[in-house]
Image (cartoon, rainbow, N blue to C red; front, side, top):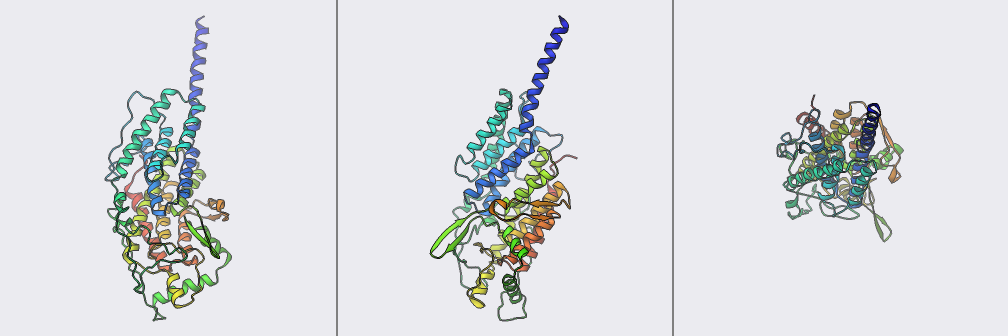
Length: 442
C-alpha cells in the first residue's frame, strides 16, 4: 500500500513538473520576445512615427522588459537603475510569490510600448494573445496573476520615469524658422514638410551626459563659387554618383532608405508608402543576431535593450548637431544651381543634412550588437523583403553600419563628409554605452 501511495505521489509530482515545463517552453522562448519587438515595430510603422520618436518607443519598452528580467535573476543580470543615473530602482518582486519573469517582461514591454506615444490600446489585442498563450500552456493561475501584477508595477514605474525626459515640453516648443540664406536647410520636394523635431536635442539622454557630449567636426563651409573647394566637390560627388549608380548601389540605397513615410507623386495624384524607420531596422537586426547566436531569453532582452539605448542617445546627439549646423541638402543646391530636373534616388527627409542620422545611429547600434553577439558575425538581413526589397548579406554589424552610412550618398541625400563624421560620432556613442552599462554580472 505504501508503495502504491509513493507511486501516486510521484506521478502527481511528475505531472506538476510537466505542466510547469510546458508553459515555460512557451513563455521562455526568446523567439516570443523577438516576435513581440516586431509587433511593436509594425505598430510604429502603421502609426507613422518619425524615426526619433520611434527610438523613444523602443527604448522605454525594452528597458521595462529588461528591469523585470534583472529583478528575476539578480545573480546574472544587473539592474540599469543607477547605471542610467536618473533611473530609479524598480519595484522588487514580493517574496513568496512565484512569478514567471520572462512572461512578465513581455507584458511590461507591451504595456510601455502601448503607452509611451501610441493611441491607447494599440497592443491590447496582442497582449490578450500573449496571455492566452500562457493559459493554453497551463501556467498556474497564481503564477499568471502574480506575473501580470508584477509586470504592471514595473511598467508603471518606467512610464513615470519616461515622463520626465522633456518629451512633453517639446510638443509645444517653437517651430523651426526657415531662412533663405545660402547654405541653410530649407524644405524639399515633394512634401516641402516643416523641419522634423527641431528640439529633439533637448530630450534627456540615457548614457550621454548631454546631447553635446560627442561633438562633430564643423561641416565644410558653403561655397559654390570655388570649384576646387571641399563643399563644391562634395556636391558634385553626390550628383555624379547619383547619375551613374550601379545596380548594387541602387539596391544599397533602397535597402537602407528606411523612410517611414514616403510621399509618392504620380501626375496630380499623391500617396504615401511606409517602411520601418532606421531604429526599427536595427531592432530587426538585433533579432537576427539573437537568433543566429541561439541566445537565451535574458541575453536577447539585454541585447535589444543595449541597442535601443544606443539608438536613443545617438538620435539625440545627431539632432543636436543637425539643428546647430542647419546644413543645406544636396537636392536643394543641385536643383538650384546645376540641374533643376535632378532628383535623388531616395526621398530627401525633412531636416538638416549634417550629420547623417543613419551613419550615427547605425554605428552606435553596431557597436552594441557587436558587444552582445560578437564581432564578425556574418548574417543576412531579410527584414526589408516585406517591402519587396531583396535581402543583403554582411560579414559583421560594423560592416552593415558602414554600408548604411555610404548608402545615403548613393541615395543622393547626404554629402560623404556628413556620413564619415556621423559614423565616427555613432561609434563613440556605442562604445560609451558598452563601457558605462553592465548588463550581465560576470
